[in-house]
Length: 585
Image 1 (cartoon, rainbow, N blue to C red):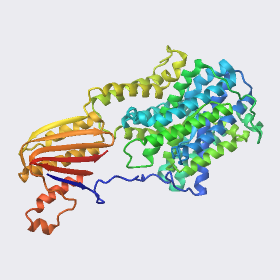
Image 2 (cartoon, rainbow, N blue to C red; image 1 turned 180 degrees about the vertical axis):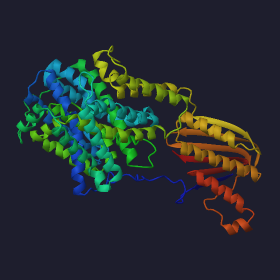
Image 3 (cartoon, rainbow, N blue to C red; image 1 turned 30 degrees about the horizontal axis):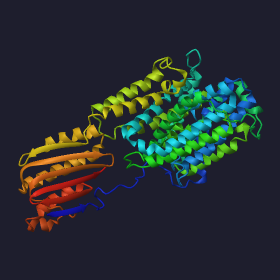
Image 4 (cartoon, helix red, strand yellow; image 1 turned 90 degrees about the horizontal axis):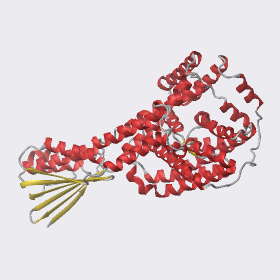
């Protein structure tokens, strides 16, 4: 009996990859950012994240609250967003993903929050939001057991749906669409000019201009809106009359609980978690050019930070929060994903909660600025989502999963009234493209897994050219498993080279059995035959050896086989040979 194990470790081989820094990344997640760059990067993040602060105002309006009440709830929302953003970037212990993935107003919570505040006032909103945060914190601790629900193509679909749904907000603001469905020429011209300025600075400007491109575009949009009268006088007056410093009130804070609202808030927390899975997928991808799969542990810690942030929101008397796809897209656009920006952004929101005039400036953000910011985010996030989806081989099953799920997801925003016939407590699911598309994708993914074999076998005759047969075999296996094309290609090349060597040097008798198996982290191939083991070498024969040693070509063939695999194990038991190839996935 003969047994041998060989690992490929040379620099040009296939050893386990380290994180590869993307070429377009200026400040990576762990980089320090100079103050001159840090200030504008934080400023544009704060401005962009402030767009959704309108939702707490709408919740107050739903119960006929005063302007002062709305200002208080918004201030509390800013504090909880700031704390959540800092917790998300934290990377010690089990709290925080360690990525710059800022928190914003939890739009998935909006329908359930309105139901709560109308049923029992702000004390009930506080209690149910606190409950939702506790539920999400629990979900974060078991997310690693749900890894099967989030293969790479589904996480790519989640990112796609997040970015595509922005269009329904971006285009109406970009063209100044009014209640009658008519656009505004001045708004459109200013939007085009602002976007052109950002694109020009980003593409043809230097590194510094790229960092300042978004903030310069925002400033240009505000100035142009004021000059051309696109900022209504009442909004300008609201900004001018706002005090510089004020302490938010806790008078509305209380705790109440209603069992009938448990399901709506669980659905909202789950939808928010789906969105965060997509956002953290993007964060991982843009910070590592060698990204292969979702880091479930990091996602679990990120969901825990989001759950804590939502709990803080409940204790402060405001709504739940979620991670911001817009913030992630903006960080991709500027090439700045440093945690320092996250800490600075979170701190600014906490401070601004006590500066009403600053908050008022965000509240009067003109349409061209909102539309252009969202357009920039879409431009960078959509291609990233497409890359994630296409990073795996897709067979007919996965094509159906993605195609059907995208259709239902898009239908929420494209088909008027879609989902309106469902009960109100289901609206966070049926009226949300991201939630409906993701639930559909996960359900179909689990259904279509039925009938997928973990092992695939192939028997071939020695002495004939089987290259095409091997190519078809591994292509079908890779598509069924959703494996990465690069790994499947290496496996095909390794097996083809091995069989060619066995045949050429007459090491095999009779048929060759090939068994391929897959799990998310490994692709394994076993080759069994009667005969003699090939010569496998981790070093390449020299030119002199190739000229003078008749065994050098056999060693060269074995070396080429080793170049493709991450690990090879060989065994010969009374003439029955087994070659085991492992490919890290």
